[in-house]
Each structure stands twice: as C-alpha cells, then as structure tokens.
Image 1 (tube, rainbow, N blue to C red):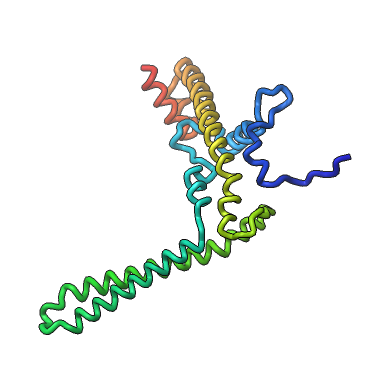
Image 2 (image 1 turned 90 degrees about the horizontal axis):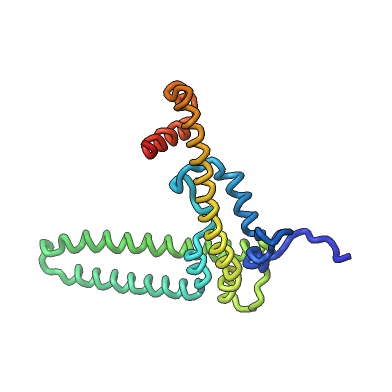
Length: 222
C-alpha cells in the first residue's frame, strides 16, 4: 500500500508530456489539452476565435528572471535622478532674470516631472504588490523553494511552468487546427445537405456563426 495521492507538486508539470496512456499513443498532456478544447473550444471555426489559455512561455521566461531587490534599486535610482532633475529645473527658474524667458520651459518641465513622479509611484506600488502576491502564489500551489535566498525563488518557481507552457502551446496549436478542420468538414456536409434541399431557407435557420461559415465555404467551393 503506497498510501493515498491527493494531488501533485509543480515538479510534475514538465513531465506530463512523457506520461503515456495504456496504448502508448497519447500523452497525459495531450489528453489535458484535448479535454480543454472539448469543453471550451469545440465549436471553433477559425484561429481568430480562440486565445491561448496559459501565460506565454516568453512571459514566463521574463518572470523567472525577476529579482525584486534589483527592481527596487532601479526604481530608487530613477527616483533620485528625477529629484536631481527637479532641483536643476528649480535652479534654472530661480536664476532666470527675464520672466518672459521662463516659458515654455517651466510648464513643460513641470508636466514632465509630474508625469515622472506618477509613473515612479505606480511602479513602486506594482513592485510592492508583486512582492506580496508572489509568496502567496507559491503558498497557493503548496510550493516550497529549495533555495533560502528569496532572489532565487522566481527562477525556481517558473522553471516548472516554462516547459509546461511551451509544450502545452505546441499541442494546443496542433489540436486547435485539427478541431477547426473537423468543424469545417462538418459545415461542408451541412452545406451539401442545404444545397440539395433548398439553401436559403434552411441556412438562415442555423446559428449566426454557422450561417457565416456556410457562406464562407460556398464562396471557397464556387
């Protein structure tokens, strides 16, 4: 008795593609993708109607390279440079002997500095929120990083997601194309039936997406 398995860790994600079925012809990851398409994309007729359900692999790669301390340091540097710029602007304005020479320098620089302050404040808030939510995310997935250094945690965490997302996307694209092809073939059969029994009246009884597909197929076949 090996005990009861109530779930699995993130470490299993990259291995789903290697887990085969009874007849060794479909992997567990392929099965997961097909079930997703069956439940959420079964009626799709074109690629433009669907979207990838996972984060893009490239976005996950960038996320894995994040070091929060470095980002905070960069923002602090930007803030210091902004304050230095603000002091220089004040110095120029205080030294101006002719008020007519102040504009449009004063108004443009005030607008620039105010915009910079807002952007820096927003970046600080975003980083603070991410720093708070990232440990919560790891806790949600019951993930415990091996490294004791917090700067290594994003790299460890996303290392399991990147290959999974990449493999999922490859299979998803292939299965979506197969689903679209099957659906188009079904519509061709409906077109054949409609043309044999009176196209206009019965075609307009179809749902709008199918009616459009019928018209599209007729144009291609004509």
